[in-house]
Length: 549
Image (cartoon, rainbow, N blue to C red; front, side, top):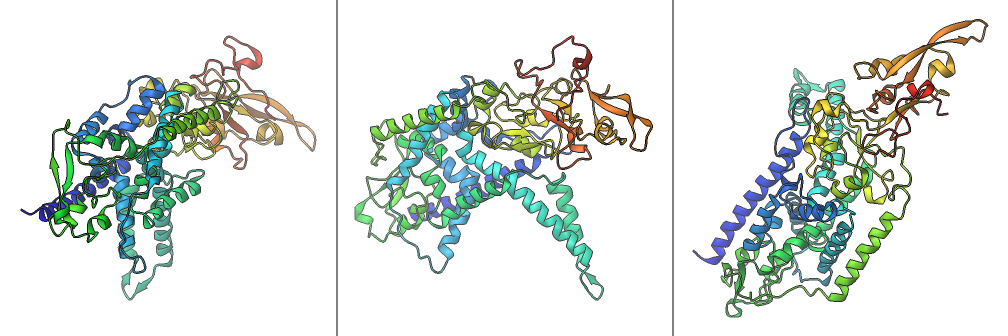
């Protein structure tokens, strides 16, 4: 069999593997939203296979507890076959390939040779900076890791937007009921909608704060593939940089001869990584995705991949990573670490009241040393209370999960967030133990609460409190009326010994602009210093019912 034909067979095999990997990723993504019961196994498989997540979390948290060692399998495969994870497995890389294929089909954009650019070294410098930051305890890998970026974008923008469009479209069709004679469009639209509702979306549509910016970032990353194929992989991806360093002396190597090359440039045009397949002896294994496009494109059979002993020096070139640039990257990482740690919140001097973490979240420093901003917990949350952080946790905690009780609440009978977290930034607590964890404390704003401020009956917060003995109770009080006389009203109070800060009272409060009962991070179990309620108190301390104004 000729090298070109073998290359074409491998290319089609790669495409099939890429499609299966992408479908598996999407299947696990959709399975993360359960109506009830335990989550499906293996939801974090692609994060478990990510060696960058393993390395960075180990450097920042100084422990491997709770981390999968499946990433070592990716390392082993890379040492043998090169960056095949990037070219064959990575779902985000597959999506970029699909977008880049549109580039070749645009009439006004003709195929052109793609020479290696010195800017492709940027991903190695970014990797160094991120690892230095991780060594100092600042885990920013998840901002740039392709698995986290793809999952976070799907969870917070693509799926909610798609679900909203389908729901509104199906509702519009149902209301208009367009038909031609006896043929009604709803006869086709309603079964399709019910299938998507019951089998794909499963739960109620979620909404996420700041999803517009996240969507713009995601679309921009994809659009850049129209300028350069696999743009993110070439210039930015720190995982690709790590795998590239591991593939420097892989056993599977590209070989070719000048005698069989007619300088047609087809191999260069088909190479999505600018790995210089046309320059025999100067091929770049650190950039090559192992896609075999170059072998399949060579009509003279002048290129082929062959195995060689790992200790034999490959006939290849290397990316020139100058020591000064690497040192500057390390210094940049230290500077970034300094920038993230100079705020009072980062130093633990003050506690941000809106920084409410999921039940089971580790103390803030340990949490940030593990969280990879993947969005899996947000996707799994049945009520949508978990939202991507913006300024609540400082720059270091951007896109990490925080409570937003204006949008949702923590379901009393749910512990999914801890079950799905791939790095155990959220500890997987048994359900009964999770019910005892306090993530915050409710406080009543008596200037807005109906029984206090307006002399009207309201028992909504107490009715919805899920604690069996009710963390919200009533004290009867005589309230003067405008026309004279008094009436007895039930005024709510909060028992701080029972309140877990689940947020359902804030979610259900009749005031939708600014609820009259709100949750803050005070009294959270994970921070002994953030405990305003002294044990064994009396009077107001026993029910925490003071006004907040």
